[in-house]
Structures are given as C-alpha cells and as structure tokens.
Length: 345
Image 1 (cartoon, rainbow, N blue to C red):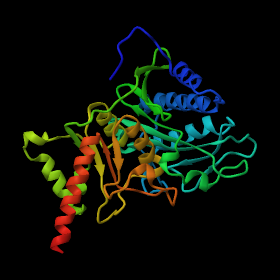
Image 2 (tube, rainbow, N blue to C red):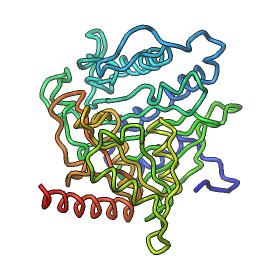
Image 3 (tube, rainbow, N blue to C red):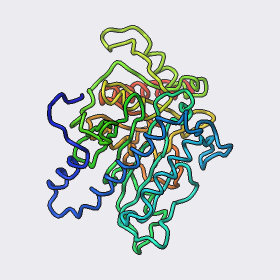
Image 4 (spheres, rainbow, N blue to C red):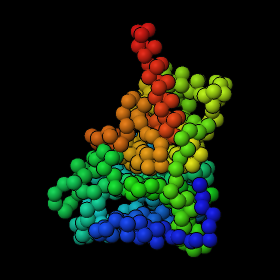
C-alpha cells in the first residue's frame, strides 16, 4: 500500500541504499536499473502526449509473435534500444517485437547482463487511453566471450537477478524486485523523479477478484470453464461469488491484483494450447515479482513458472498467477475436475 510520510526517497537513492547492503556489489546492476527508470520516463512522456504526437494507430506490420505493431509499440522498442545499447552494461537484448536477439553494436563495450523486455504491453488499449505497460527481466550472462547469445536469453525465471514493470495509467508507476522484496515508485512529473510510494509490497493471501479473457472460454479445457462458473456461484464459505475485473493489459490487471489480491489466468485453448503470453518477456518477470510479494505463479498444469526452462525466444505458456490461497484453490479445483473428466473417458 502507498506510504504516507514526509520522507521523499527517489528511486536512485533507494537503489543505491539497497546496493550498500550487498558488500562487493560492482554497481553495474544499480546503474542498469537507473537506465530502466530513464527509459520509463521517456516512454511515459510519449504515452502522455500520444494523441498529440501522431503516434497513435498501427504501423501496418506484425511483430515476431504475430501481433499488429502499434506506432507507440515501435517507439517504445526503439527507446529501450537507444538508452541501453551503448552503456557497456549489457551483452545482448531480447524484445517481444524482434524475432531474434538484439545484439549490442560492435562499436560499443559489452557488459555481463542480459535484458529481455516487452516494450509496450497492452498496446491494443493505446487508442482508447487505457492502462498499458512495459515489462523487463534481467539475467546474468552465462556464456563465454563478450557477445551475448541466444543461450544467455534462454534461462529459467529462477535465474533472474531483477524484474519489473512500468504501468502508464493515471500516474506512472515503476515496480521492481532484485530478489529482496518488491518496491513501487510513482513518477512525479513536476520533479521528473520516481519517488518511493509502495515500499515492500506484500500481496494479500487471498482476494475477491478474478481476471481473465472470457471471450476465449468456448475453446478452453472443460476444467477451466467449470472453474470460472464456480467462481460466479454464491457461497459465503469460499468467498464467492468473486468479482470480475479485466482490462486487457497484463500489467494493469496484474498490478491491481498484486495490491488488492486475486487471481489472473490465461489458460491454453484449442486454438492456442500454450496460451497467448510470452514466457521470457511477460510471464517470468511478473512471476518473480509475484513470488517476492508472497504470491504464486504456475502454468495450471502442475509446473511453477520460474522453474520452466525456455526452449525458444518467443515461447508461450499458460498462466495462473496471484494470491497464494487463490492459486492453491484454483489448482486443487482444476485437478479434481480433470480427474472426473478422465474417469468419464
């Protein structure tokens, strides 16, 4: 929850203070997080003036995962690259907008970190002025040599050294973790600074909200359809019915549930057995944040998200994420219904 205090703590000061608690830290990760904050400011500026800057609408292209590319998507992707390519902190990058890895130009020094990102999640909401976001994941390089490789990108989420997201809504909020709790910062436009607003975020153990795209339910596995029906039934003992909230922006839906409690799910379907969401660019970073805040993140098929080793850059996975008790409850319900259906077959 937001802190109400006379203390003003900038993100730079907070990250630096956090670094001091880790003797031997080189400062490279600290500076990389500063770079992320700068990117967030740049993208936030353009999001806030998008209607005036002739960057609404689509480019006519599709990205590596088959989605229409919005003009602001393209701008955000280029903004990340322009800030990050020359710093000497990264060896390689990967973006949802690119089919392959993004190499650091030869003329610039290489670093020991890998940056994976979704430059503008929920971009279908841009033209309607709804919440959108940026998601990022940071790994350490695992291969030899100065240049980063695909292998450096294809690491399980459990190896992330940092992860976070930026939510561009009524205010711009940056939330991140380095594996020592989750902290949120709100951009003060008058100062041009991110100020600590949500220290040590802890998601409730259970919530009253469920978030999903029910437009696809006709193609879901029967157990998932039955689960959503069960959530709507009235039963005080199990805190039902639950309220439905769905923005259509993963960052927006996740952030709301992180603060208030609840569960978000995007299961596979007949058309998309692995679901829609990308493991490296969306699911792994949000899963690290969720677990650090006391929640759980699984694929609904018996696997912890952070234990999944990716086999390709744009791998998709089903997702069930949120408050611990809600995820536990959903897993138990799905397992029971699958057993029933298996017995009937």
